[in-house]
Image 1 (cartoon, each protein chain N blue to C red):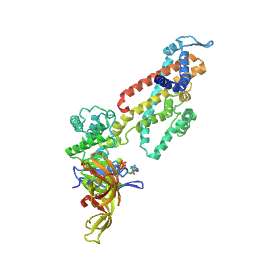
Image 2: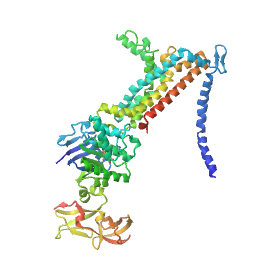
Image 3: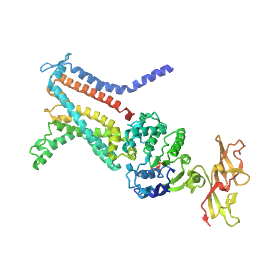
Image 4: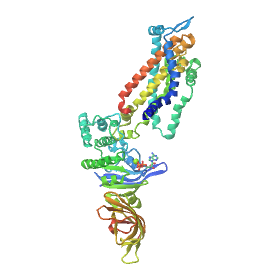
Length: 291
Length: 346
Ligand SMILES: Nc1ncnc2c1ncn2[C@@H]1O[C@H](COP(=O)(O)OP(=O)(O)OP(=O)(O)O)[C@@H](O)[C@H]1O
Ligand SMILES: [Mg+2]
């Protein structure tokens, strides 16, 4: 009897997680596997997709410098965006955390509110302000005589980094905020009583303790920026492509699905490697703070 | 000779007065406890001394100098927080060294002093441990070493032992007292544990709702409580309504059928307060009936119903037979074992 019960107990977790597992397999694993397989298929202008196994797409990506440049641009934009959000977001979270009750919840709302607005709308906002001669800010500055020609924003990497940083900021602030909540509320007083000034307290006591929060925020922002689609599509358009917009174009404009699948797969693999690798590094480095 | 002096200190948060009219002078090397129930303003008072809060009124002086004008980082006080507030990203040694580093103590001297401080709290060999890998008691010792290594003028302890289990707490109490005796640092301990306050301090400041109820040695506060609050808060006590009769001569203090010569200078209705262990069973005195009798190893606890209300009696277990439940007894005590409050002075 007890053996039967044991067996039933062993089966229960599987039975209980089955619906979720099936959903996971059905909508994630199967399409993913099909995408990977697709990347090995052949494609021709007139013959369409041929389900054969060739390395043509991968060979093209590996040898054509166009793809190297595009991937390098993708990661450069993601890295710069991550740096920008960390530099602005960490102090922002710290200041927010020091505010008193009512102001704190108000500004938290201000920071998190944009999450409720579509990425497209937020990016279009930047386009309206800086988009060429008709951008609001550009028009204003030009009519004031401050600048001769409009500040280049659309179709530039700078524009993409700025707009992405704006979109990603809440993730960084939230992540640092969570780390700040784990601090002992008396820790600054403790450091002060030992003779530390405000700068020393931030540098020696606060920073090392919120670093894990900054880094996990950085991982989130980096992976979201590297695979972001809407913002690069609006700011960069067809002129300044990143991995996600390129894959999109191959799928929907050129109709070269296998090549698009190869680009998407490479982006995914690279991201997974980077994220898993840096996560392991962070956990090793900050074992003492995390435990 | 006041070393640290609090002069009519008060603290308000908005309209709420949390500490009021707090005056205390602490001698050099003295061990003082702030004792009171939760929310009575002990931490607030301590934080005003530390400088994390500014008093609304009043002055705080250290060796005659106004302490409130000095930035908390420059006060040179040692503080142990209830949560310890250790720096989790630093080892025990780095935690202890931090204060010395801030003072620019040279490296060689620093490591020598850190080693000595950790050894003093019994943590030799734990230099390279991180706080998260230490037990509560060990963390508490690191916090103490970190506060003491800077040779503070005053050591402030905010319920440092309340997170420890009973046995460890007792050990740490003894250790804390020994360390304080050895190095002679003036110490203020915040606690809501009356046993802790009594076993550690030279003097106890009993607080209630932001006000001082009594300042005195542990014996004084226990045996001569200045108010009903103090006598209730410091251990169990019996309060009997009594009357001082000035008509008869010599004047008599009467509580039920218990009577004794009245203390001088009082008259009218009074409250007679007697500790349970000072009451004995006799042939005369307050008549009472024993409701329950509880055996507690080294002593017996009796709950009685007396003519002046409920009473508790504690008797040493000296092997002699004790009255049984339901038995009628007479409760008696020596006049010097009671304290009398109230009564118009006459
Ligand atoms: N920053 C603050 N703002 C408003 N009220 C406060 C603040 N800090 C403390 N109080 C109030 O002051 C009173 C005393 O607080 P305090 O922390 O000094 O109590 P305590 O005696 O240390 O209690 P405990 O034993 O629980 O630590 C409490 O009623 C508390 O609600
Ligand atoms: Mg407190």
